Length: 208
Ligand SMILES: Cc1ncc(C[n+]2csc(CCOP(=O)(O)OP(=O)(O)O)c2C)c(N)n1
Ligand code: SF4
Ligand SMILES: [Mg+2]
Image (cartoon, rainbow, N blue to C red; front, side, top):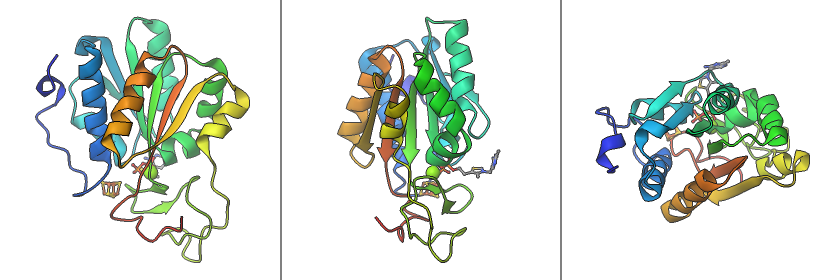
């Protein structure tokens, strides 16, 4: 496998400076380093800016529904355990609309890897509050400030299953992201890589 041969002919459409580019390079580099044939890889994309990555790779893929990518991926893995199954989603889809699926997956620990662009916002829809938005932040949906405490996904998942592999990394650091993705793909069972990042278009005002 070469780096070139998993890219599609569609160039990424994210905003200039978007950190989703780092996750894109992270997946490409991790699959290349692990030398996994692309026909053995299925990537299930959630919805949102990060989910648009579905157009930019040419592995087998499903562009799933918002919050429903984890059960879709679990079904694929159970049907064919030889496949490397990866979910790519955002904080809104994985930790918000798909919370129940996220917790159920932590309990079952089916062998898939989930990579989350945690930019603390529903970004594709122009910046509404998500479950990880810092308390007090002004967003499109909370002009007076988000009233709720944010969730912390790693301890949340570990609360239901302390044995799972779950990490939160600096999503602005490509070296950290690539290393975490490689480790997660190799890990048998639940592996979450939460990539903390800023949405450079709608997130600069968030309190941190
Ligand atoms: C069930 C459902 N509700 C709402 C939407 C509208 N919608 C599309 S993208 C999106 C926000 C996605 O946020 P996130 O998952 O954090 O991804 P990001 O855009 O931040 O990368 C929403 C609410 C939808 N597509 N489906
Ligand atoms: S709106 Fe934010 S998350 Fe979406 S592409 Fe632009 S910078 Fe990236
Ligand atoms: Mg988001």
